Image (cartoon, rainbow, N blue to C red):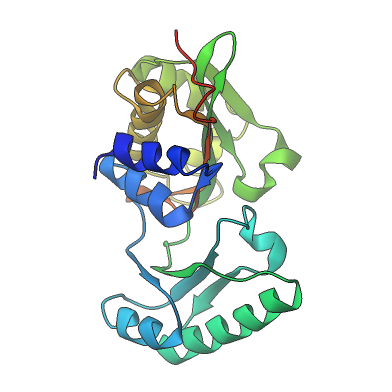
Length: 240
């Protein structure tokens, strides 16, 4: 199924967003690195899926009714093996039920290696069309407010300037003994979101917002650890 078909099917069904697994599959199709993962329905399937992945694991709830997973205890990190992950699934399902919520499915992933947390985001502005953003801080981006925006499509020179504009840019080049991150991988990810053939330009009629938060930049690559896609209603397409 093509990306157009994936997004179109969700919009036709009245979905306001894509689940994280679908979002990551779309990012991977655009060449953005995502952690290896499996979708499971219960702890029995999880044990089989864990055999194909390398621990430690991350376990996340997948639910069309839950957009902010962390707010409802829908994310567990650093699970050391299949037994620990299966126990976490059962405990999380019980905790969700106590709040009147349930999982459609579960996303089991390999942990992304530690690195510098960034955010790449985008939106379709009613006046200017697709816009791309990069920021420093991951989940703390609203505290740090260290971001740079451009109207799409961007060039690679634009992407370089966006990173240079961040007040925390020296952290990407290595600071206080920390190694520099792979900035080429971050620039590649920016271009694959906001470039001429990027995700935002290719699907501006269907996407209202997208966030890769965090994008974890390491000395050897940049990985989308989380992905959020907000869809435009099927009768509210944007056109240039």
